[in-house]
Image 1 (cartoon, rainbow over the protein chains, first blue to last red):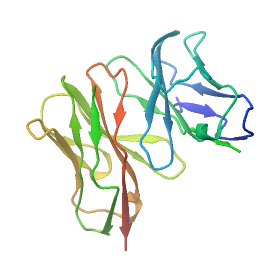
Image 2: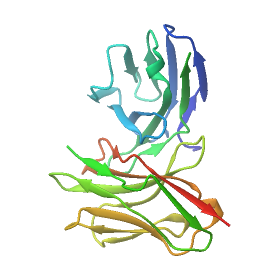
Image 3: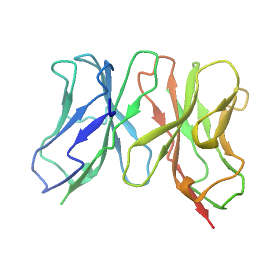
Image 4: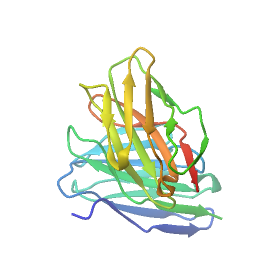
Length: 112
Length: 113
């Protein structure tokens, strides 16, 4: 297994557009996490799935954000009506129960 | 709720010198502790973790950390740094169960020749 992968690695969009990011976890991992990292800050937790169930959502995840993991494998994070404040690195991680999260390379979003 | 404080935003050091990156945490429950490293334009890589047992934890690339429950600290150390250790280092805490990590703001280690 090559680890957690994320696509795209970079995304530039105009304010008001919708964007969608994909995360493919390590195959045997049933937990999947999304984090957001802004410049000069540590990653902040957004949401977490166990298999296909979304078990926790941060209040950072506004109504414009939605995450899915329909078959308990890959996950998507969609941001509707993007704002300049959404510019950040979006990190995905996965884990098995009892193990630490393994992080992907991230998707860097720039909203113009 | 947990929180993590990394007091040093940047630590400059010369190659082959020792280094300590400080981390203090706050939690009302027992926690797991982690150090991750982030190289430019990359994701986070686990350096080491404390789950239970020995308070001195050894990780990759010659790093180690010591868990001190009374001082709620988990400082990262390396006896001799290399240029390649230049990166951002994040301390993180989670409740037992790994549901989510709470990260500090990071410490940038700058190693110069």
